[in-house]
Length: 190
Image (cartoon, rainbow, N blue to C red):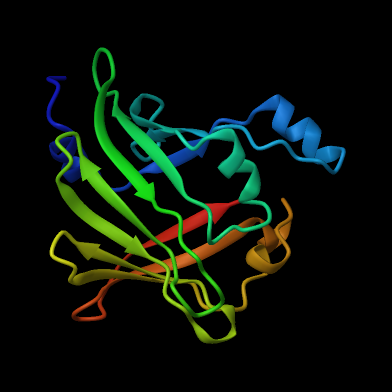
């Protein structure tokens, strides 16, 4: 097909599938109890598709990547998202979560998404929730909450992630922040 802009491509999709590229050295080091964090890479497909629409590459340096194991909510990270529909790949978006001094409910982390010109498109916020709930909010460029993700607080896949039964999934309900209407679902698989 004819190549469009990244935002036009996303608007045509009924959903997306994101798959992390597994690194052998990371998997082997985890088995031995000393996991070495490598820069993550992700392929982003249309549902049921095999052709990459986008791919994402983590740009976080090796020190911060490995400190995430100990200071998860505090460490910064950044991801470049490349538009890969058609021939070749071009930069599309940049997502960055700055370093934050996070402690329980104080100064919860936020990630900011920008286009290639550096214009803010929106942000993802991890608010404090009672009992360790899995909730997120998505805000537009003006800072208005437009979407909420509700994961509840008692999911086996979060507390004991194993590749069996329901412990392999973490499920979120995506809701319109203004009306509360369900917009879709998101499932994270371990």
